Image (cartoon, rainbow, N blue to C red; front, side, top):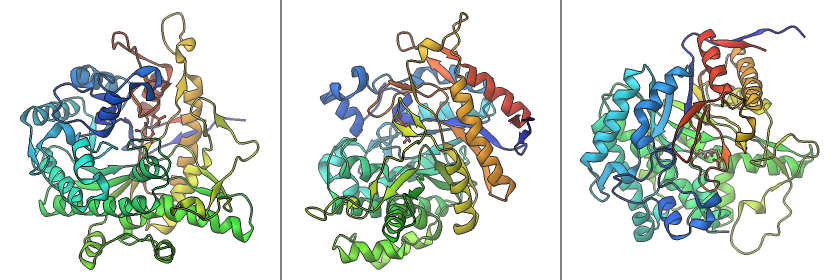
Amino acid sequence: MKKQKVQFPDDFWWGAATSGPQSEGWFNKRHENVMDYWYRVQRNDFFNGVGPDVASDFYHKYKEDFALMKQVGMNSFRTSIQWTRLIKDLETGEPDPEGVQFYKDVIAEAKKNGITLVMNLHHFDMPIELLEKYGGWESKHVVDLFAKFAKTAFECFGDDVRYWTTFNEPMVIPEAGYLYGFHYPKLIGKGKEAVQIIFNINLASAKAIETYRSMKLDGEIGIILNLTPAYPRSESKEDLEAARFADDFFNKAFLDPAVYGTFPPALVDLLKKDNVLWQTDEKELDTIKRNTVDFLGVNYYHPKRVKAPETKREGNWMPDWYFSEYDMPGKRMNPYRGWEIFPKAIYDIAKNVQNDYGNIKWFISENGMGVEGEEKYRDENGHIEDDYRIDFYEEHLAWLNKAMQEGSNCFGYQAWTAFDCWSWNNAYKNRYGFIAVDLNDQSRTIKKSGRWLKDVADNHGFEY
Ligand code: BGP
């Protein structure tokens, strides 16, 4: 078939995302977050025992890294400010001068290289002290401490950073930490707590947005959500209901408050009926109502395939009472990460945002393919020939482009990620970067996908 140009706007963002805890390393950090702590006490939970202590050494290598980002054509980059690095006194929000200086240097370096920064405030990195003392996101006091941290961040960097986000993938915090136990505090089946955490994080985001707006800074603030479209196994009433629940719980419980300041009514009714609805009051609901986002970041990796529930309703409340996931025959898989590859979902998400969320402006804030053992793809010049990653990106971008042709208000695409980085449990097992990182000496080499990105960014698209 004859190839056609998949053309993006001239001012489209081409870039990649990472987070502070996954890239910086522990150097000169004031406090420990939950992952730092978990790694310190239980190293074996992490692939090959590799931890966030050095990560990809962004703390020392940020200058070299920005130069490389520019070299691979990136005009935008997202990272996060670590609560545990910026803040000296977690109760008052007083900053740590060394933390302030580090992020100031990072911001200046991005500017020097012509790279637009998106600064995120929370990427799963609750300070361990606040978890132990107050129960972390279960506590409204911690919500207020987060708002203080956000205020400090805006005071220190608000004049120099134009794009802010409050949270990355907030749903992962209750899901991984309180329902299914794969992130610290590794709890399983804590449905009621998870529901309260969903509410509290929405409130924390709204309070940070309120603070930001009150400071009258020249910029915008949003949130980054992992949207996982829930496709039903069949058109049966039961399967459709299961898919609707999964969408309400895993997507809309953050999407609706972020964009509209309200929660999905069907979900609220169900949680009330089951006696697990969050504790709140009119004042808090009003704070959420009044402080919606300027833009959305969407992380997309894989969809959910959903069928009517198989689990019996017993014990603690669980979302599994209302839906099950099923193994759809013939689905394409990334064998390394165990995630389905389904590029069309990016189009479906875009249409959903366009049709049901007022066509709010948004960007892809993560999308990528983690692969184990990429060393075997090195050519004689030492370059990793990651054609599979290029194919993955092109397929997703082609669907995104189709939605944009149909009016979707998408302004950018940030891949996960620029540099191979440490990941929560998988450590360095799966590599995602445009640029390879050698853990022995922290040297970097651009992969074929990095050269591809440069071409795409220069030409505002690609032949497909
Ligand atoms: C997202 C997170 C990232 C990153 C990515 C890849 O959910 O926001 O922090 O880790 O997933 O996932 P993983 O590293 O677990 O393969």
